[in-house]
Image (cartoon, rainbow, N blue to C red; front, side, top):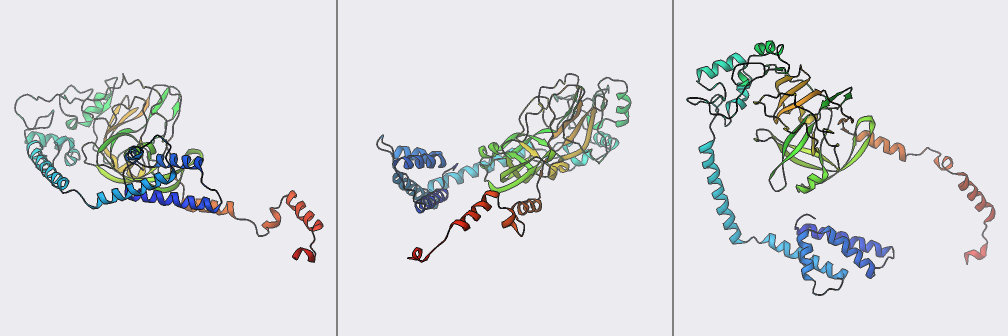
Length: 444
């Protein structure tokens, strides 16, 4: 138990009494030693506040009895049930007043700070507008010129641009936003620079990425790591480090993370198969809401829970000193080159929905910056050695295959009674038949 609950306390007491009765049927009686063991097991199962109240209820330093803790649990469940049934009037008034104030603050702040997009009139800046991104570069330039917008920050202001970000594209001498850079100009600039990039293309078909880390020679392949927000059981948004895997048929979260966030577990008993047919079992699943930083993308997804997803990614710190990423690029994981644990894995269920069509190419196309709902992913190859190869291809084992294997293991041939007898069993039966006999006196 992770929180106070009358229902869970009653379920715990029913489970204890049911098992005690079963032990008594098997003629295992309780004694002082068994009571101490049972009390320690029960204290480990109940919530922290209930353990505290039980310790406070003890008046002496003697070891409590089994009956005393059962009486405490019964009384505790009755108290919790009465508290939840009759809410406090003062608490209701206070919560109502607080909620009213919160609503007024939210409305006022939106009216003051949020400005609608000049193109689609929705609440976001122009550079995040999907309609603006889908326009050709020439149409974007014409739209910015007609509306007298700043070519650096894409906002309407007078005088010099005061934005702390200077949007430039490597290989281009002009100071302008990367969304206004012509792809043709960029292609010619690539030929004359050591660190080469290609601007945003208008191609609507995003490139599919493989996520297996392959190590060959002195190169390593980058994985698609990103930062994702998860809504906990109490409504807070928690930032986790995730991994995109187009070859996974399920989404996975670390079990310890799910417990800390207070999610309600469901019994699953899934068989998950990885590369080389390695299979492991996931006992639980949970429905979890995931979203990006500005909450423009949010989905409710069922996650399988596992103790561990993969080792730290990358295995060691990567050297990115020669990797010039444009200042206008917002990375999905700013620490993609630093070793870190993976808390969550997003499979093909959401993989292609997360991708956006824009791409940057760095280092002669060896490194690709792929735009997504969470920012730009860094993928491709880097000229560095890596001692360990990782692959995150996983899938849920089909229920039909599992049931078929079960029946194959459990089923026996028609004449199984004879076939499955060992030599010792056959000898024992023959010896019994030859040496045993009954007469009339045995019936008396």
